[in-house]
Image (cartoon, rainbow, N blue to C red):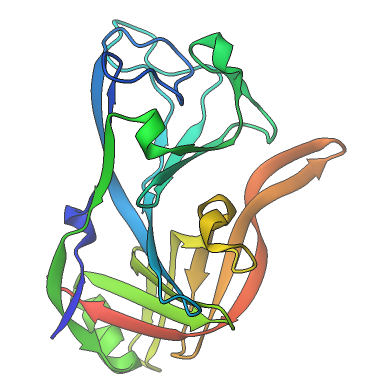
Length: 261
């Protein structure tokens, strides 16, 4: 058996307590002074620095919409954005995607300036507390395409791990397999799933969080995967949107683990 993340029982948490700490990431004044936010875990990225043996974990939360919590009406922010949290042990990255790239809204209070689409803050400065709770379970490693196809057809819960490295870093990305293709005639197995975290390995260890991009991943062999990365993408002169538009191929090792039904 193999220990693997149980994504259905793993979460990112953060606590805003305005009596304890003024907000740094809010764009509207809340009606209450306290809120605990819980977001499902979508991906965990482990990066090891081979020069120091230091290991850092980066947790990707599920996407939600920008909202006002506890109001009597007009819950949804205007303009509205997709909001995705990314967290390391000490820092928090808020990713917001509006109808076009480049939109910034005033922070609350306005003396803080404007919130960029990628706002990175220190957890100790921005929140009363924040953490990611990872629940593990015992799973069965699926050794080949036949075993993986049979697991799909049996509606088993699947988790994937993709590992690769460069001269400085070792990367392990763990994520749930959501959408997947299975062919029991030719034994073809191919997930098309995400989003996952894709790190920029040209960055220093202290700057890895700021370089994280979102991507979808697909593979049908054990030794490579292809990703399509979310980036600002031109759709008209002077108009960019965030779109999964840049494909890349990675030499890696892919594992698939079943948690059963």
